[in-house]
Image 1 (tube, rainbow, N blue to C red):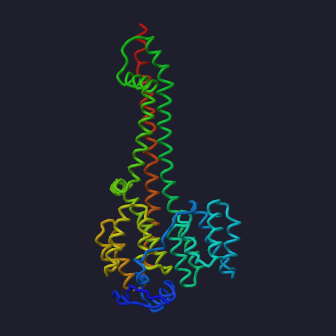
Image 2: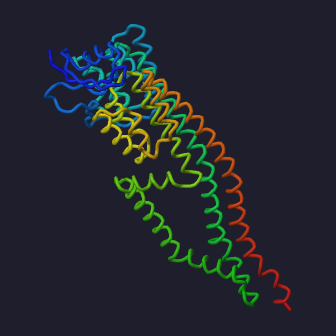
Image 3: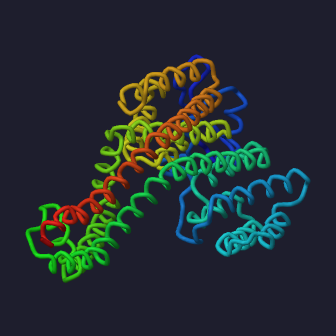
Length: 405
């Protein structure tokens, strides 16, 4: 048996540190949970700092929908009494995702060779995300793998629903903007030259707006059109590369939070994902420090992720969750108060899930409001661009009679 050092919080909220012997980390965690402790950290002595399961390269990415179906089917089979290898063999044959099929087949071989399910899945971090692997580990520890897999499926479904709401809200304005640009480009490239020849035959001086559009048309039909396309593509690649750097990602996420109208929506969405993921992990029995390692990255915002890392460091030094949370401006007081109550009453997971439900509703309301506001604005934008071009083309017509005379 090995000796494990642990850090827990008792029912009075005090930090308790000690050591306990056990066959493995999971066995020790189960013993501590049975005593009513809130587990912050468990690590084998002389085995390095505690962390979530280390992910190693391997596997390919799969859709959240495929993982959701896999989790539900896996939970049903386990509940029916089938062995892990039997379940994995059946699931590998049923899934339509090639990457998931390959990963499941390899996991089945590793499990049959004696490895734990969570360790086997950890070899495929692109296929099985951190939250999935750590919840499976918690399910193995507590002997409730089927229940945990159902929670994972619920989590992925809610996260997908949240993303779907945002995508549906942004699809219309993006499509309208692209339509406006296509219509404007078509009129400048194909329609304006016809009017240009007609105006030239009439003689006389063209109105300033009309002349400006003709000049723009000439520019786009020549080398200028190629320059514009190259510049747009280059800016797109440059922005993407900048956004993928740590500093760029932080700056961009900070800008998004400060944008009018969009900022509050981005913040609510990040908080919804943070609380939902945190609550799901805590309810599954994942230690607080390990859970915080995961939730920061899944929030979708680098500002929130950095705040979570600072909170984790403070908790590791003995602070409660609520205190460092209150010092991060990105977290509203309501969320901090709810988490404080959850810590005091021992119902942290329940409180986190309630806050997540609240922010899900807030996101839905914000998306509906944003959609109803964007639709008329985009219609006005379309009418303004097209209308301006039509007016510019027909302004010279008012001088036709005088030019003919």
